[in-house]
Amino acid sequence: MRDGMYLAIGPFVEPGEGEIVEHLSVRFRTVGDANCTGAVRSSAATLEAIIDEVALANVSERGATRADDKFSETAMEDRKREGYF
Image 1 (spheres, rainbow, N blue to C red):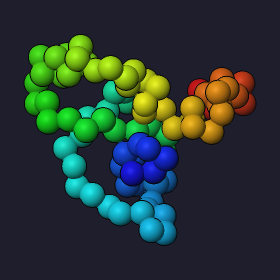
Image 2 (spheres, rainbow, N blue to C red):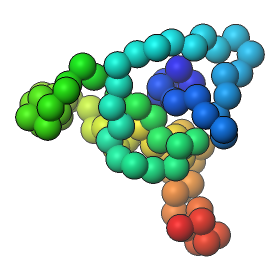
Image 3 (cartoon, rainbow, N blue to C red):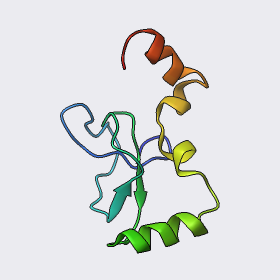
Image 4 (cartoon, rainbow, N blue to C red):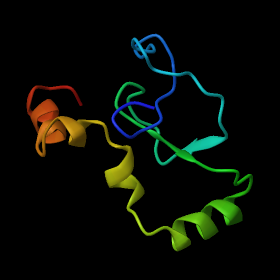
């Protein structure tokens, strides 16, 4: 958990000092950059179960899983202008 989001450990994301590594059942809202896309805790194993979860959610997964939004309100747009996409 970093900045209120679950991030997957990988080549670009490693646990920081004091961060605890957990093994959880999660899903990702989108396929995105692994160092700026957070996971959503979920035990859904089928498309129908995922749709049910999303329908019942009271928080937008987009806003809850985009790390760029934690840096600034325009971070994603800034990266687009810089040629990231």
